[in-house]
Image 1 (cartoon, rainbow, N blue to C red):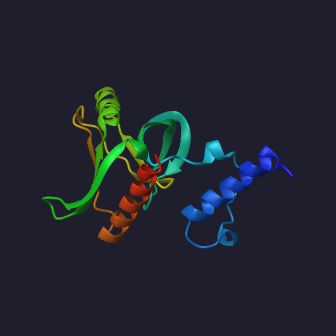
Image 2 (cartoon, rainbow, N blue to C red):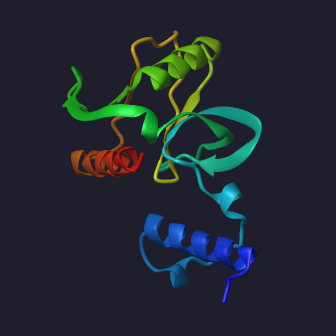
Length: 165
């Protein structure tokens, strides 16, 4: 028997939420049936948009509206690396492949003075301001908010998504 598309979408959404949220779904009182396309962002960098999807910055109360069209996603990342900054913060470097680096450079050139959003595993984790065009395909999660263990978990998540190209 073939499962109707609407049920498949809801089941997919529940599966995604179960993988992305700590605790059980029974504890999630705000779970609402949403279309899968409206409820999940691939890991990657995004523009902010007035009419985008509302998301709250992880570990903060700041609210942003995210353009659902990514600039680059995990498949565009060629390499990830954990490093310690000159200030002593543990950070996660993301090096893009050639195509991703070109899109990133073009986007950051247009977005100077504006914020971009880094989403990992459907969590808004970083919203830095673009200060100049970024050539060479480099980006990083370096806000000092996450522990080395958490950054390693983010790295593992990104690497899993990269390898599923």
